[in-house]
Amino acid sequence: MPLKKGVIVNFSNPHPYVFWLSIGGPIIFKSLSIHILATVLFIAGFYLLLVGSKVIVALIVEKSKFFINSKYYFSIVQFLGIARLFLD
Image (cartoon, rainbow, N blue to C red; front, side, top):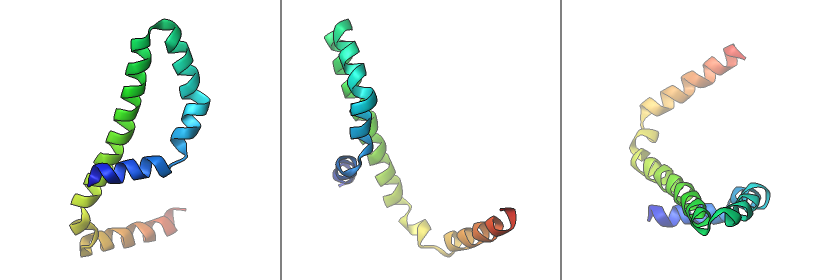
């Protein structure tokens, strides 16, 4: 289930498309002139890290639900909100 959540978030996020149009595309074209393996490794590494990081975030959120619903979390958020009022 976390993998599915990570894939959905990835496809609905515009940042990868902006990346491929502005940075990733030129890197791909340059790596093609070097070696095809460089291109394959770049694309594989990019998607492994991008989707993998989103899966890890989804897992962390899933495992921390008990803390987010606790009174300790609510107290921390209140304290930080008050501190923000005085420190800005």
